[in-house]
Length: 331
Image (cartoon, rainbow, N blue to C red; front, side, top):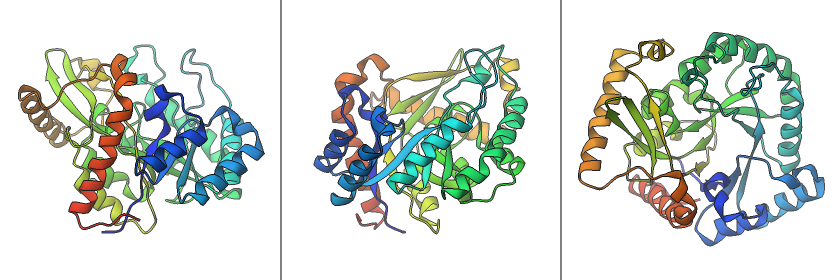
């Protein structure tokens, strides 16, 4: 297998209030190879700041990845249409100045959990219209907008979007693979990785688990190595790509109810097969065993600030251990 650089996503350490340069220093001191700034810092408007950040990262052999992009052309609070092209143009220009070739995009919604949300097909159609129009901007800068596998669209739907956008892998649209969020969208992380493999350009490496309760399935974030995400299989898939992929660890607390017993809710996942649902139930059974043995539990988000630094350090160590076990070497 190919070699990977292992870094962190800045969101993981948000409670520490680190400046961008302090985040890079934290990476240096804790055996991380880089930082993905999933949200562009306030100073990003300043070109001198961008130049200094890029130089500091290069001097310390750290990779940088950038965020701040959007792909849903609606205000998710009001449902009103909005122009996201200016947002993406700014984020793309910042990334280009930094010498980065991807921009993470996460519009942050739980649309199908809300009764009055915009239908998925409408969102896909309007997204395709907006993103097709932005293709020249992104291509001119040599940028790929990396849409995160978040709580908005399944990998099946993202593939439909790319088809509607007449995009090719590596051209101007891609995927930031969040390995735990896939569970919340009723997808097996390893199977979903295989589905969208050619499109993956960045990652959020995050462990998680899923429980079956009377009100549905509950997904939650877990410390790396404590959950049920099969990192070995996922890294093997990523290793087959003909380009470098960095493993940017994201971790946080919290859990998410997936009301699969609600007949209306479950119809909002038309691509969910019996085979994949059965696989998720098997993962839920494994989670139940781990919880019963007190090897795994849900971490409330309110506790993340006090635990984040120590846990992210352990996350880094575990991911490196997985790579070393598979005969990979640190870059």
